[in-house]
Image (cartoon, rainbow, N blue to C red; front, top):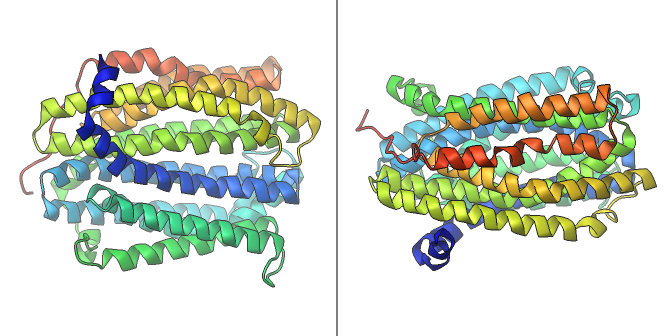
Length: 454
């Protein structure tokens, strides 16, 4: 019945295409940078590819924190935009920029001044540590500015400029890929810089992204960043913002650190396991763009309805989105299986690494169903109504109490085969599905969380 409603609801499907598709494209384009890095560095050497894959786990943690902050913009911003309150939108914009700058400075300092200690968290091989440290020191400058640009893009997405947000992100990504080729291989007269070239390309791409954001935000019809809103502390708004953002940030930290721990565990299983995992991570992240983009768009769509007071309509849209999550999961399962042969051809892997990669893809084919359902329902539907604490609970139990202990024990105590350790890292998403569905049916997320003018 719900599936039939999804197929026949033209209004919902149109809104998903208009809102979620540009976010999906933007997310996909961002993931393509990691894919380009893997392919190009794979041609440089297996160690270079593995080292950068491990090093970028630092930026992954930063991204998780920033996405927690940006998600607060999505939760409050979508509802206030549905209410047509531009004053509050401007204040939310300024608040997100202030908090993002603080996080970005911390990560810049860590990666610029302490790259080797950070790399030792993810690898035990000195070659990988040296290459990764070289990457981090150069890439640290991109970590300094990424928070500002992400705040601009987030406010564009929730204020009916989602296409512009996707366009800017795509320009930055295409620039990153082109610059990758130039500086990794030494094209167009540039020196061949290898790993450091990939980092340098990332820095330049982030600069391009921030400049595009600044120029577009000055145009008529866009929300302009007022310096006053960056340094002014609006007490009630700060309370509301962190009330809904802290659970998201906590979940992002739990998820981000958990995922980097998964990578660290695989990295300590040897170069072949690390290389196979880096390829599997790229393909997984490319396909997960569907659920990430879908969650972002669906959160805006449902949040607009709830903020406007259309609670029953928001509830109906939630049912449609939940059915869509299962369809996307099945689609991704098929795509993972079809990607096995092409994935083994993108890099010069050893026979052992190639064997590990095939096994990991078989595990991923099951994992993708859980990933799609949990991402869209938790990060899209629940967050739209301010029900942001559930994700923290579910991650605490499923990832930190089940998946991580199993992976750690499998790798270092039981010495299980690589594919079984990898399967342990995928237990959390699949295991959450019954719990997620039970919580969904309580409909605690169906509520309007806006206030009158503060």
